Length: 389
Image (tube, rainbow, N blue to C red):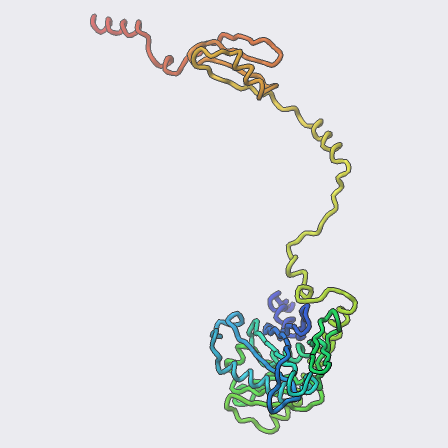
């Protein structure tokens, strides 16, 4: 007995399940989109010169902002910070800012007066679970891809150069911390990495480990009220180390490819990363058309075609209307077609043809009322027969 073949839906599901994480960059530096399955996060980095904090006069400022809009999921309420949003923002700050992954002292321009403020805005485009992993990857990728304007200091004057005047300067990044989420089911009996939205609804607890490729744990957080053993945490840390190595290699490869395309002058940006099959699925390929002998073919078709039949137009005249005047008037619009003039009450019909004299034809026309109506003589004979009877 033959095995049951897989359907197209099952085949697509399996192929999507083993898909690698996707990273695409925008046309500007510091803009990227990270896809983890169906979860999509847009990261955008911006900078400006501001006054430093009083207790840290020689350090720049890092600011992270994650937004959950109704476009990603209808459950998110606009204009209100939910508990989930507050927890995710705090976890991002602990993972990226408190881990000292960026050299904030290199962001100082004038000590105590001017420093760079780096702002990382993260927008959740589609929610299918595991927001913190996608957001942490998008944040670190956008920071690695970002270039700030170059500056020069002469005395008290700070000169800011445009990208056309001087090449922008990348940020000084020490390491890349990445979050890896673990979901526990049935009081820790089952463990799942990278849970989706439905799996997060039924899980008993969640463990998030932020680690870099050197296997240094930057932060760790457990939620859900589940008690975990030491062996479970060590097992999750080993798995997180392997996942972080894979993701770090993927990030470095994506950054190198984007830098190579920009140097070679190739096409880059979000529009170029979209597969053509999705847009031009019903687009037909252009076929070359030879228009050199169009006139000859048109003449052949006209010569082989049958000539059109003669058109006769009948016009009924009422009253004493001059036929010669009517013929000359109609001949302006109908040059070659014969014209038939007739009267509704008379039997005379005149056929007018071009370049010929008009012909008179006598015809007998009997209306329908005359055929049905009996004559007066037959009515008188019937009355006489009735009187004699």
